[in-house]
Length: 352
Image (cartoon, rainbow, N blue to C red; front, side):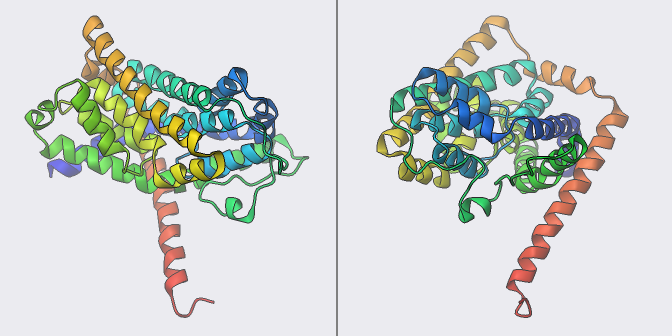
């Protein structure tokens, strides 16, 4: 069946780069502690806002995982501007989503996507303006019970810990905890991409054009769609290769991961009305601006995204691709089976 073949092809193509991104994410988890970030984000103004955007961009946290991390930073003394900047740059991009962007969309999109995310985060922080750190600041690794139970909340590690144990903890965070958070949405994203590739004719998507209307459509699709940066990539690839303009695909990849009800509610509650206005304005406005820039550069340089993606795909030999696919499939099966088992135990009348 063509749909299954397309799904398998997309999975095999993205698996090596996603596995590499997950590995790098685990190393970063070990060597970039949240205490260090909080130390540099307490002062309001441009410097802390830029630092927050740069710190958040490579971190492998999804839309839900960034919430407890941002709360921890805010209550550790980070300014509203820095917290808002962190909330935007972190879910919009990451080492894992950059690697899969390179695999599925080519080097240009792998570069402009994080640049747009960082720019959006900085603009939002500047719009929020100056403020004072919260009075009830707590240590960076001290989170409330609710935050600790959140889907991607990090667990504090002992102060004294060997490098081997740190690496084990980081890799477990990446290949178990992080895979658990993205597995379902990655499958949904790949399924959407396969469906689009199989059943959606190019003429249907091309009718939206490559200008403002196309951007609006992608934003309207992305805003209510609770999807992480990694899972949004195969969907964007399916849209792009089915006729949607590169700029519109970029709008979807920026707006989708950064906007969801939980994050918007957090910004409104913790940071205020001004912050939520700055948040939404920067996400949508900057994504539209970079959408236009992307389309302009694509036309100027006469880019062939299919050729770029094929070149990236050819850099991975078949044994490596299938080995990564098998590893990723096993990890995803393990964590999803654990989710099903946990849900069954909670609903079972015999559960204690």
